Amino acid sequence: MNLQIIPFSICLLFCIFLVIAPRYRLAILAAASVMQASLVFTIGSLRIWFYHPVAIALSIIGVYSYSKLNHNVRTQLSRRLTSVCIYLILVSLGAISLPIIFKDTPVFEARGGLDFQDVSQLYPLSFTISNVAQICYLVLAFFVFISVFTIMADGKWGKLLAVFDMMFMLGGAIFVWQFISIKFGYYFPDEFFRGNFEEVAYRTDYLINMNRMNASFGEPADLGLFSAAMFGYGLSGILILNRINLSILFLFLGLIMVVLSGSTTGFVSSVSVMIGLILCLKYVKLSVSKILLLVFLGTSISIGLIQSLTVADFIQTNVAQKGHSESFTNRLFSIEHSINLVKETFGLGVGLGSNRPSSLVVLLISCLGILSLPALWLLYIKSYDLVRSTNPVLQVLYCSYIAILGGVATAIPDLSQVTFSFFTVVVLAALMHLAIFKTKPILNK
Image 1 (cartoon, helix red, strand yellow):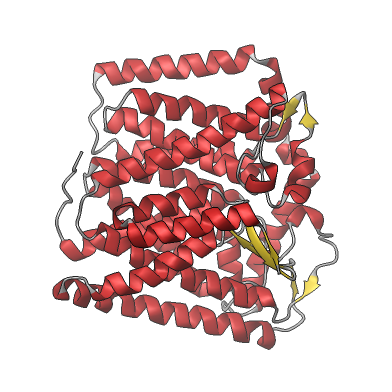
Image 2: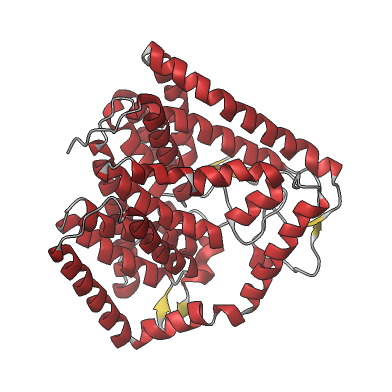
């Protein structure tokens, strides 16, 4: 066992504060979700990252908090969780049995990146530790969801603003610190924020005179996903919440972080924000001042991008020409092959944790088969209830979350991706709150 003293000590402090400072439990989890690449300890080849011990500690606390809920609320929650538990059992049974039933079917290696595999020589399907790991991630997310619901049970939705403000400011501050350290040679604690430094070092080399940033995240694509969510949070904060100062900061810093991450995922996710805003238009009235502000921001951003030849070339190389790259060809092949896996397994899939294609959506379809439909419906359709709630805080949450949904639809094939996992449990807890209390939550600013 190899213990990382500083990350372990800070992680332990986080867990202690979960117990002694119950008001800040969601904020603590949010802060832990930012430090995704901080390695706490290793046991052999097993690496434990900062977020997961905090999530486990919160889950244990959540079980106790669940027992303290109002009896009627607990009864209604239990009734709704019954179907969720049945679903998780079915998915878990599939993860164990399907790799055995369809043994030797060609799949993409579950623990390897698509760009590092020879797509002409796929791996024979078999039951591996990855199947067990994915079940564990699902179970952990389930208990974190219960914990977050108990935190939200008082209905003080305004707290979400403070939590997300803190989370995005923390992520932005670490990004700025890394940028300054690279630009001017100041110290940046790679040993704390990037426990997988050896794996991501090549991604931070100069490319078209730019460093691909990853801050405290596992790789640039993870930073791009987080940054797009920040951009969506800032833009929707201006339009929906009428917040100017912080929202403009998040909007511009989010865009800068997307660009300097050099992540195609980040660009796609940022575009998804516009879809979220369009879906909110039915419930949001845009004043003349907001429209003028949007025009000003759009014009300023466009001029800035056009004037920056470096950025323009970078986007041309990494986005516009992506369709002609070997990586893009491999991703298309992974989609086609994964869809065929559903046919070959008679709609059952190959089991969660058995196939790792180009995106999370394709992963769910190929691994879960017909069981992927309820999950996709919940993520992409049911989440729109946040907008229909007419609660401005939840609408802003949706505009931020849809950036993540856009990102995982095109890339990041990991259920364990921390930004996706954190946002999803918060969204699902909010949806459960709306379903149980049957009332529009009150905004507590």
